[in-house]
Amino acid sequence: MRILTAALLALFFIGGCSQPDLEDPASPEVTLFSPKTMRIHRVFTQVKDWTGDNVPDGIEVLVEFDDRFGDPTKAAGTFTFELYDYRPGDPEPRGFRLAPWKGSIATSREQRSRWNRVSHTYTFQLAYPVIRRDKAYVLTAYFQPLAGERLFDRVILPAQEGTTRVPTSKPARKPLGF
Image 1: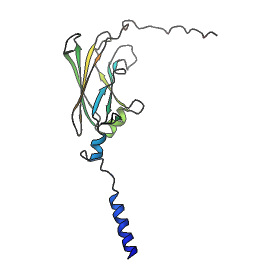
Image 2: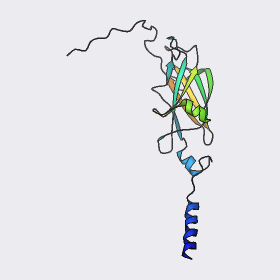
Image 3: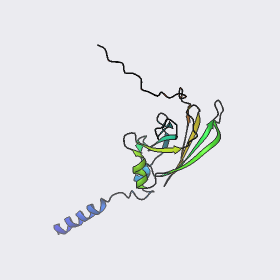
Image 4: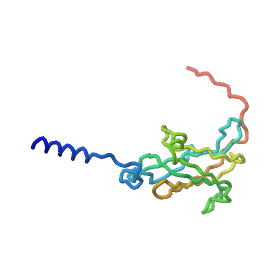
């Protein structure tokens, strides 16, 4: 009888220790750590030259998500980015819409290609060959997660000072003195 009781108790405890279903978007574990806020990184999102020809090619955007505890988290879903002319001093700084882009982090391949483990951000290169460094823009991002509420952020990309002339040679190094 003791052996039977011990076996039944063992089966009860083993059966009660199931793993959470992380594939179910409605499971408490998934909703607990799902993204609650999204932010376009204000420092590292900027007009970039990623071809190396000293001509800007578009905007490199870094997006970060936080869970309900304020900790960085990953997300899965789709983005809509939009670039607008900037209207300084206007209550609505978005002027004429210049370009829209779609982006995705819904598959494991997209996750691996866009996720940066150091900064805990997703990176997107938004090609816009007529972009200028000496002009300010408004960039918006809408994110629709696979499950959950839509998220939004907007950033003003300021004009970059002193970008009209590119040096053709490196400055001379000054030796360290003691």
